[in-house]
Structures are given as structure tokens and as C-alpha cells.
Image (cartoon, rainbow, N blue to C red; front, side, top):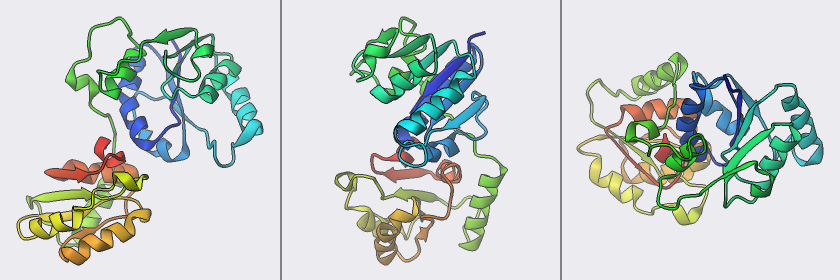
Length: 260
């Protein structure tokens, strides 16, 4: 049984799209994941993951001291192979410094010179399919069900959504539309959410999801559609995934909720 280390320290959506790769690798043996503090929450309860190792590369682990400390920690586990799902030079150097003998990543990555095996980056594939190819570069094409994001909300997340719905009088069977107006990039924020909510509010129940940074965007939507529920900043990432799973429709920008 092979022991795998997956390094994915990019954005939240990238971590979600890495979960099919984790499921594939778990069939071969133990899988540990190096990721950011924010993304670590998305991997809670995931049966494919033995251990989540937080790398706060812009916080307490920033700079060379944090890099060296993490490399020393990783060296304590004899990994057979590292999969560089996030292709930076730093990620590749971390796998090398951790003493992982086999390092796999894409041939377009900035860290490719430190890889022991390079996989062709396919522009014609969805990113989840590309990531899955790291584990089987010459295998059969991925089936659609193999590419579905795999998140595992637990009882705490289900109870949080139940409580939110109870506070706002959402009843079983009520048609629900989730809106996710936020994005890290202002250029990715569609300006039509408030207008859409105003059109929908008479026919469906609207719930706005996102982080606390999205409060101003949510306020504009509620101003246009007073019956909309503002859940921004009230739910964890996994609880947001639970809520989105209960909605009939999600309208979102190109950001994390798209992948949840």
C-alpha cells in the first residue's frame, strides 16, 4: 500500500476540485493533505484523508522558518509519493525537502523542474479531471461521477442549517434558491443578483450564502428582495455546502460556492 502526500495550498475551490483525486489515492493507501487553514475545514470528515496538515504560508508559517519547520514535520512520515496539485515552486520544494522520493505534477507548473514525473497539462479537460490524471496519467478518461466534489457535512453542519431555517420560518418542501454574490475578484462579481432576487422573491425562498466579507453585497440583495435570508458570515464552509445541497438552484460567481 502506497502512502501519498497531496499538497494543495491554492484557493478553496481548488481544494474542492482535488477531492476526487484524494478518493482515487485512498484506494491505494493512506493519504495526507497539506493545505491552508481555510481549506482544511473543507476536508473535515473526509474518509479518504488520514491527516490534514495546515500550512499557513501567509501567516504563522510564512517565510523560510515556517517552510523548514513544515518540511521537518513531514520528514517524520515516510511518504512514497507526493502529488503537487498546486504547482508552485514552493510546493515542489517542500515535497523535495520533506524527502518524498517520487514527486508528481503537471509539465506546465513552475515547480516542474523538481518533479520526478511530469503529467501533461490538458487544456481540454475540467480541472477536476486534470487533477485526477496525476494519479492515472495513462488510464481511462474519468467518468462524470468520479469528478463530483466529495464533501462531508456532519451533524453540526446539518443542525446549523436546520437552526437557520427555523429562525426564518423556512418550511419543508419550500422551493429554495441560493445566491452567492461574492468573489475574491471584483471583476468576477455579477452585478445582477439584486435584480434577480427581486424577480424571484414572490415564487421562491432566497438564501444568500457567503462569508462575512460579502455582507455589503447581501445587504444590496435584501434591499431589493426583503424576504431574502442573509446567511453571509453565519455558516461554516461545510454548513454552506449542506445548505447549497438543499437548494433547488444555486446562482453563483466563479468562486468557491460554485464547487460546493
